[in-house]
Length: 281
Image 1: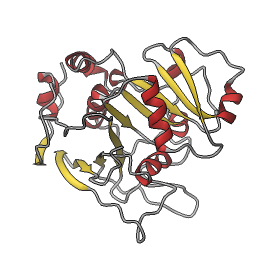
Image 2: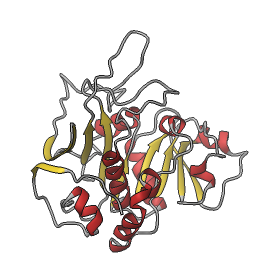
Image 3: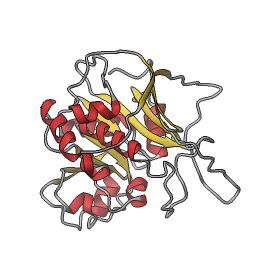
């Protein structure tokens, strides 16, 4: 059993029926619901940001923006537990090469509760782990591909598939090549994921370039954002993007979210924003 202090609910809009969250998870997080989304996957994003908007540090940095807050990890596990697929970019994989994108991998003390939730939702034991790499520059010896803890899907281009063609994929890892040679669109990623597994809920954990693509194409329904109480700072020598990189919305195409949930753990805020103009097709 976990002894985490529960999140304090500051604000919440009830937007649909409550999910069957087991008692241990409900004691930590409270009610979790999603609006109706019949006929299509509902796409969630999850990110942590510093007070000054830094969501990713330089490549190779092991410093955690969240400070490895246990409640943040537990909420990440909760979102993975309700997801049919978890999408990450190749840069995110390189930043945490030993990770697996399963609920238990991010917060092991709640592994049993996460499994109970998946069972109650009628989902397979683990979400599909989706790795997006346009160039196909992936190390297939990493645990996400070799552990067998969860099925994996590599979404790449024809060029990337050719680069990976000389390597042997385990039976639980599949590769799907999409048209084009540059950045892979969010629409193409979602189409590939739905071909690989029937999905009701898809979770994107970034990085910033991938999240920017989903936002630009209006494919993100909601963003779960943890605001960490620290100032990261930037200088001329650092590349420290926010959670959306490679795109610009303001002033020509402003993108506004609606706050639908706010919770607190100490000085950390757990915010949830809905995007009403997300593409419903």
